[in-house]
Amino acid sequence: MITIVTNHGEIIVELLEDTAPVSCENFLQYVTDGFFAETIFHRVIPNFIIQGGGMNTDMSRKQTRAPIKNEATNGEKNLRGTLAMARSGDVDSATSQFFINLRDNAILDHGSQDYGYAVFAKVTEGMNVIDKIAAVPTSNSGGHQDVPTKPVTIVEVHTDG
Figure 1: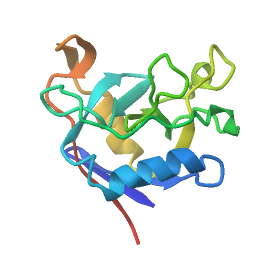
Figure 2: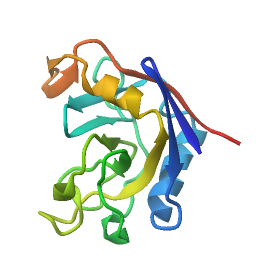
Figure 3: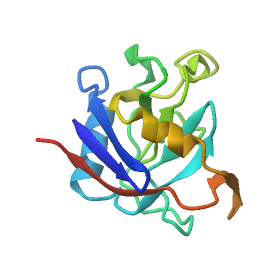
């Protein structure tokens, strides 16, 4: 289990290591490195997703490791409470950023519109925290849309046990 400690509360997630081994190993390495500390959820779209794991409070990007292979063909679905790897338009471009689905988002699954987004974990506790984050006011900031007007900070991410 992994605990994501935010300034809005804690979110506990279970990694899906059997179906998303590359994504899980990647995420765990960022956790081990302390990479997520003081990053933010920089994209909040109610009834869709909250995204974080790669930006500082000033909206600058943190330096990441090399991108990983997209595991969107693993059979996992972008359902409410699942975590998936964020990426650019390039299929294999995911690094540290992830998003949490606020609803069932079949449009993000493999083959729905494009290659899809690899689901690698699911929330086991803390959906109330995620829903609280989803309700924060947002605006545009530094060329980005849907940015919380007050930072939603990831204080730390750690493994349990």
